[in-house]
Each structure stands twice: as structure tokens, then as C-alpha cells.
Length: 164
Image: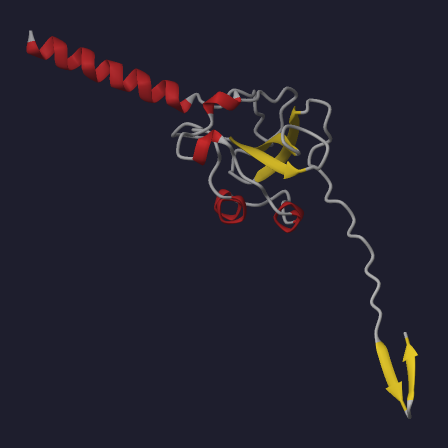
């Protein structure tokens, strides 16, 4: 009787491990592309992120994203994926990013999902964006151009002040 229970428990664990290996939902080709990226629900953000919110990437971080990067490079650049992606042969990482956008989104914040697809050798090959809030947003959100600064200074030259 105990042997049967142990076998059933072992089989259950094996099945759970096999299912967790199938966490990748998109049909990813060997070359790291997909015709139909599948997006995880925002409610499934890993609970280790504060309030299930995701992160605010900088323009500098986003500008460094390129094909051919490894998972370690993305981990260093963007942090770990925001969703539990499975344990074995994971070929896609998903993130939730927020951008400060005055007058747009909830509380002036636009939310986007970002997906990285890896090829069979674990190099990043494809990148996908999905607007979440508002759904019509352009992702990634472009940073606004800085306002030009006017600098006024006074210079003294032989008893005369010149304003530049």
C-alpha cells in the first residue's frame, strides 16, 4: 500500500515537472521566431515583484537590447523575467515595463509587456511588444525630447557688462 502511494506521489511530481517545462506558450521555432507570441496574464507576474507591478526600464537599458544576447546578459541588463517561465528548455522571457507618460495611461503611467524569444542555442533572436494600458499606446514609449535650456550669464569686460 505504501509503495503504491509513493509511486503515485512520484508520478505526480514528475507530471508537475513536465508541465512546468511547458511554460513556454508561444510556438517557438529553432531559429527563435514565432508567428503568434502568446502573452502571460498580468495577474501571473511573479509574486516576488513588489505589488505585481513590473519595473521602469531606462532608455539606456532599452537601447542596449540586441539580437544575439544571452540570458545572462539580459539578466544583468533588465533583471530576471517577471513571470515564472518554467524550469527546463525555456525559450521565452516575459517582462512588464512601465513608462512615465504624463496625460496617458493610469496615473500618467503606460504599461507594456516585452517578450524575448531565444533560439535553440539560447541566444535572443526576436523581441515583441504589447501595449497593455492604454491598449493603443506605442511600445516601447519614446522618452520626450528634453526642453532646450537657455543659459543667461553676465560677463564683465573692462568696466562693461555684456549679457550673453
